[in-house]
Length: 368
Ligand SMILES: [Zn+2]
Image (cartoon, protein in one colour):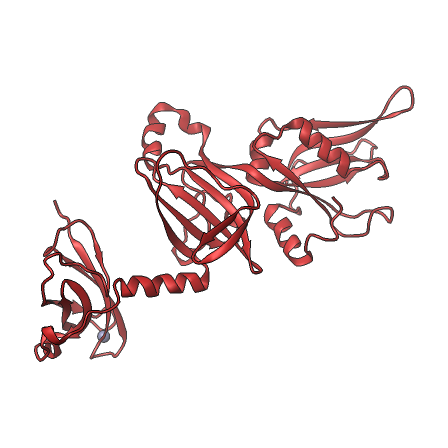
């Protein structure tokens, strides 16, 4: 098998003077695709020696002869071979165990972005709840929203499902906050193992529904797992409508925040919408949009006895999935004179926009 291990490190190219990150593949060890970083104990034999190799500078193509010092089995330094020849390896000192890994981790903790191992767990992954504290990258995060990634129905197809299942990792997606910093955290567990980790992403929900999105320049953007749909477990559901008269509370747009959980259904939604369109509002017919798509109609209907009946009608059968992925409904009204609502809007508020508004204005000032 063509397996190997890899030394990682840096040196300064003597020709162009640039700092070069090297990636030296070696077959001298156990060949298990292990990564060797400065400070790692790599040689179980506890030996002392220099590992020599030649590396070509990616900037100027100049080859350098380099030597990695291994002291008591630990990777303790990188030298030019010329220099290494004059060093008595027995005089080199051991350094902090996992030196480079620790520095890399420090950096992630400062940026509050990147991967944090969570060790191993047995059994099923159980998500956190809204309000829980998650300590990741040395930060205590407060959980604001909880989603999970589920394999899409299309993969119920036996043949497709087999290989998708192989790669699928049970995952919870949290929106979190700590000291004014917002992030998205993915908690994932291997489907066929017990390794378990967290990945902290930028709070960029614009990326949420772009399933095919891949951009290696933006590695800190959340991207939904291949073949999955996002399901709201316990999230803030945002209702937004534009202010349209002085009887309204003059906040433009009008926003209210409700709770939506996995178990919420049509009657919950109906109750929330009736509350949001309280009786003091003028009688209009409204359309409810998710990401600009018309999914529901809400109207006040005049009954024979002169009374008014509120009616909510869903126009799209998969409304729950759409709402789960993008828990924000934007309402647009038209007068009750036979005008039809457009099926699509180009100007609308979606979840990402609702979050931005909340950050800007705080929770106060929103009618609930
Ligand atoms: Zn160079």
